[in-house]
Image (cartoon, rainbow, N blue to C red):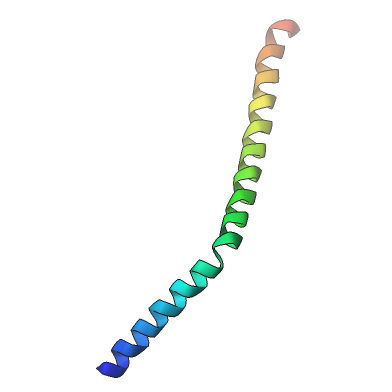
Length: 59
């Protein structure tokens, strides 16, 4: 039982340590995905706005 508790505690501490060290990398990846999402939404939003404004001119 002590071995199992030590093993679990060791894994928890090791995981927490790795997450703290990789926090900057996780932030960078999250910022990259947020920028890609914003660009995609901006592109589609602009495209829809142009299509919406262009319809009355075509009639």
